[in-house]
Image (cartoon, rainbow, N blue to C red; front, side):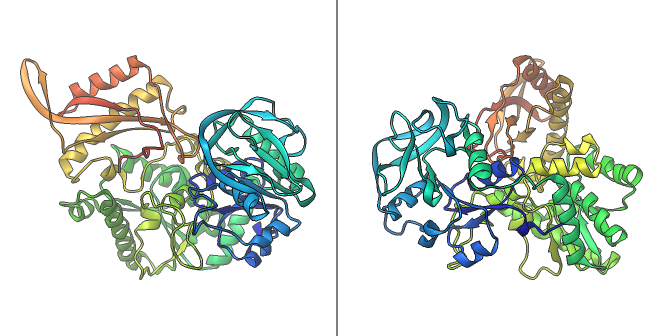
Length: 524
């Protein structure tokens, strides 16, 4: 099989949008490979990928502002189809002689798209379909040779085209879930305009990943940071298929796992999958490391560093090992702003939301070479790979669980007593969500303990002064955006009653109804 860069590829140039990687995900849903690069990527590096199409993402800037991010203007004169999205469209317009100004009335949220030309980019897109807008600037006039394809009540040029030069622009965001006709626009660009074939499949990824692992590792040994989640478990199966006995899986119980999970994980891998697992009980060590620590970013970094230290120590006992394998995914890299480094200045293009232990806590003198074959995949892609590799539904369908575990679901200092309280509350929540049949509907369902707060309650005519716990239920496609889930009151009532009655130390249960954005899914 040809290597990835020989597959049809669409390159997304990132101008700092939170949705840049979501564009990549949508393109992959068409079974066409895509990659996100910083907008400053030199043209020769872009062309070396032999892209079939280029997409310019949105971004938070105004194209007419001093210091606004710009790309190589030679992009406008290639024979490669190009699509500008929001900021990308405005940049295309301004650079080619059109005019972009601040709008008298911004357009945010849903808008009906009225189609003026139903061919080419907007083929099979219904008139008056809903698209998602998010812009305060507007195109006032088009460059020479461009046509108006669609408009909205507030935006005269909602979609534009210069068919001869294969240049296109949309003011809306076709990549977001709320754009009803968005996938039709993406398919039109990818298939009809760029001429891509749907060759990016789960089977193609597995074949290529195994080849790359073999080429990188050769006959040397790899140590895998196994957590039991779908990411590291999929990685374990992938690595085991590629290098067999040269893989050693190590599960470090850092003391932040959910109730009964460590025992279940080790038994599953050893007895059912026949993949040896080295179990390391390091709970006391990790908890001691976090003593007195309340800042969430410091928690993540300390846990990340301690993970590496434990691996290095254990590898001396079990090794030698040359590689450390991690189940790092695209969203981990996105939120740590790892993909958005300016290759010229080294500065971050996107705002850093939070670091992840996989990518934000590694020491500069790391002794291992990292193996991260899932780094370019989204969670739904990993699930498909895991299923194809033979992982059972119990793991493939497992909801995301953060690397730092319950440590970042306890606001403030982490202590053994607080961990015990949260484990019991979390177990009740999971039991009831499973019993209700909602587990597979939800992206994540979990509890957060607020030990920095105490509330007054009454139980059996006695005054209590105990902790509140927060219930968090969200729906999502990839974790990049999320909506709070509308759980039936009867289920919430059952969960609340059980927690308050069965978990000592909790006397109040509250519900988080914040979506992402503006919040994040996890509290820390």
